[in-house]
Image (cartoon, rainbow, N blue to C red; front, side):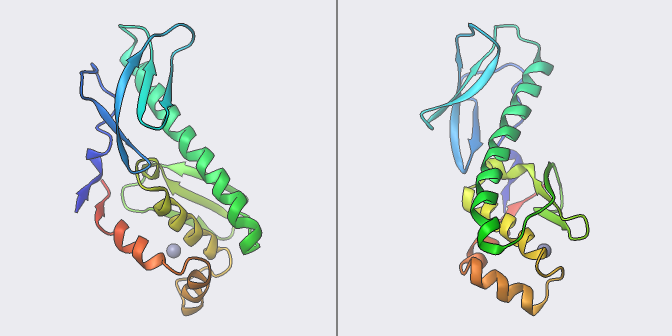
Length: 173
Ligand SMILES: [Zn+2]
């Protein structure tokens, strides 16, 4: 089992050299950049994460900065995936929300048509997020894990079992 806490050991209290964060399945080094305007975090040519905050920046504010940045990355990707899958599947959730969950990858309230996605996905390979999102979208067509559910799953993501097996090697905490 891979331990999820390894992917992002939380925002650094005091950022030392060698700090890194897993984003979309890749462990990226975090470097400090100069802060000339508002504090912020960005991906630099997809190969490193640059944090721009003044030295002595409030650790709580820095933790917030990290959380907002990671959620924002995930939100944007889900938005793109929804634009891809909604017309194909002919379903549309009323809303999706991100949530830190310890026992589930995602969930779907089929009555409210609300989909919850685990915030951990920003650390994992994008295909795993896509798998879970499509799984939850299928619930809007078939609420239970019935035979029909898996038949629909098979149509849209024929390789879903591989992704499922990969998720099962990751331990949520
Ligand atoms: Zn399900």
